[in-house]
Structures are given as C-alpha cells and as structure tokens.
Image (cartoon, rainbow, N blue to C red; front, side, top):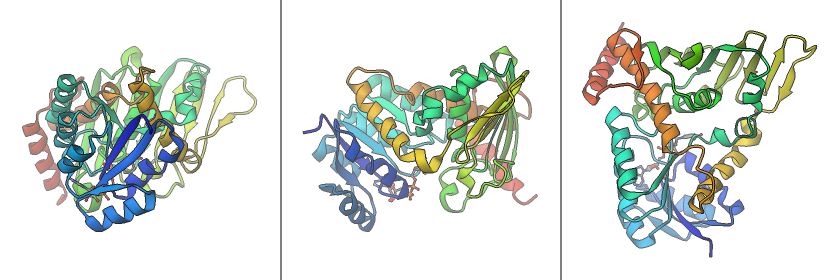
Length: 348
Ligand SMILES: NC(=O)c1ccc[n+]([C@@H]2O[C@H](COP(=O)([O-])OP(=O)(O)OC[C@H]3O[C@@H](n4cnc5c(N)ncnc54)[C@H](O)[C@@H]3O)[C@@H](O)[C@H]2O)c1
C-alpha cells in the first residue's frame, strides 16, 4: 500500500492534470474523488480508476481519512475547504491557485495551518519545470550584468494567470518580496470562470524590488503578452533586461539569452506542451517528499502568501490611487468597494 492516500475535491478539467500523474508516484495513491456534480464524478472516477466517489466533501473526509487533499475547485471557498481538511487530520492540502480572493482569507489560511500543523501548498506547478527548478533562467541572469528591469506579462487576469506570473517573477527575484507597487486597473468581466477569479479585467502594475530592480507587470486581456501566442493562458512572458544583455522567456516557445560579447544567443527549452505533465508529477511527488522530512515544497504557503500579497498590493494601489508600500494593508471592505468601482467602470 502507498504511504500517502489522497482525495481530489473537484473533478473539473483541471483535476485531470492532478490525477493522471499518480501512476508515476509510488509513495502516493489516489483513493477517492468528490464532486457535487454526480455525472462529472462518475466520469472522473471511471477514467482514473478511482475506487471511491462522493458528492459531499465532509462525508468523503470522514470516510476516507486521506493524508493528502487536492482542492481543485473554483476559488471562493478555500478557507472552508482547508478548514475541513485540517479538522479531518489531513497532513497536506494542495490548493489550486489562486490561494485566495479576499485579503482576509490569507490570514485565515495561515491560522488554519498554524493551529493544525497541516501543510498548505499552492498549485503553481511551473516552479517544477526544469528551466525554473534547476535555475537555468536564474543563472542566465548572472551573465547579463546588473538586472534593472523585468517585463512580466499575461493575458489572464490578476487571479487567473496573475498567481503563476507573480510566482515566477518572485522566483527570479530569489523570493525577495517587492517593497512597493503602483498600479492602475479598470473593468471586470464576470462571465465563465472569471465569475470566480474575481479581479480587474485590465491591470498594469509597476513593482519596486530591493536593490532597485523594477518589474512592469501586465495582467490584462489586452496585454502585449508573447507576440503571436494564442490562448489567453499561454501568455506567460518575461523580458529581463540587464546592463550587458537580455533574457527572453515564453511559456511555450522556448527561452533564450544573449550577453555582450556572445556571437549567438543561447536557447533553452520552455514548453508547456512537453513539460506540464512531468512538472505536475514532480510538484505532487515533492509533497510526499516534504511529508517524509525532505526539502520544503517550492510552492509552500509562504511563497503563495508572498505572491498573493504582491497581487493584492496592486489592488490596494488602484484603490488609493498612489504608490503603496508592501506588504499590503488592504481590507475586505476596501476590496469590495474597489470591485464595485471597477464594475461601474465597465460602462465608461
Ligand atoms: N495550475 C494550473 O495550471 C491551472 C490550470 C487551470 C485551472 N487551474 C485552477 O484550477 C481550479 C479549477 O479549475 P477547473 O477549470 O477545473 O474548474 P471547474 O469549475 O470546471 O471544476 C471545479 C469542480 O469543483 C466542483 N466543486 C466545487 N465546489 C465543490 C464542493 N464543495 N464539493 C464538491 N465539488 C465541488 C464543481 O462541481 C466542479 O465540477 C481553478 O482554481 C483554476 O484557477 C489551475
């Protein structure tokens, strides 16, 4: 029997990526799934050969007593979902991004983690793709002279693609958090998945990092993104400018860098198509390794909190109409007031 027994909550399209890597992880077994939608649940358990299916999360936790829970629902209930898991003695909960929507939720999750000892990990799995995990891009930064500017760009909003983009930006910055942000935003779109990933439809932010590095952060359906890329979430782009060279990173079209004196750029792999499955596998396996006393997970609560704080800080800046220091002090009431203002700006 595998050492860690897992339950997946939510059997939508994203849950498939979580389930399909289990066959390659010896120490973990996916023993149960849960979805409110019975048809989805049945199709999912049949497809992945999962023995137990439930339509009620608390019943699933009580009957299965899993070691690990994957929360693959739309965001909005992460606190309740984590609280139930902690109450059932779960050792590690993997939350799909975004970790939270409202500022207060991050404090609640931290409280749950501290009181229960349950590990919380957020599914920004790209940290486990080789060019990021093994530091290839980060090492190239050491070859292009002093880095002074990063352009980070995606066409998803602040809560859909924003978490992935900020997570990797912070990784590039050695997980040092920004000190200040100035941002502008307008409009909301509440159709489809955006009804849950509640954030401005258009956000542009400038971040100040220690040492003087600036980041231009574009999370906007109209963002420049990666030229010629198509679906909104395939845009996850970085231009890194150093005083003696530059780095160009796309999500699915490779990455390269060139420094002064190099006759040709050096190219590396960056391919969602080729890397997403192994990346998700290594991400999930690293949860078991951490539970076994191995290295802390790269996407542990602290890194997700830093990402969330940077994103929510941009909203605070929009709310106040000025550059604000970080970490943010934004409240849920201010968030609601801003969201109303942004909704009103749709008409403009
Ligand atoms: N990490 C990535 O690369 C990546 C990619 C795509 C989506 N996502 C994230 O994954 C999450 C899920 O996305 P999706 O497209 O699969 O969503 P979805 O809405 O299609 O599926 C979510 C499922 O959860 C179920 N659900 C919700 N609350 C429940 C409850 N209390 N009990 C039982 N079932 C419940 C719903 O019935 C639904 O079937 C989102 O947060 C999204 O941002 C991450």
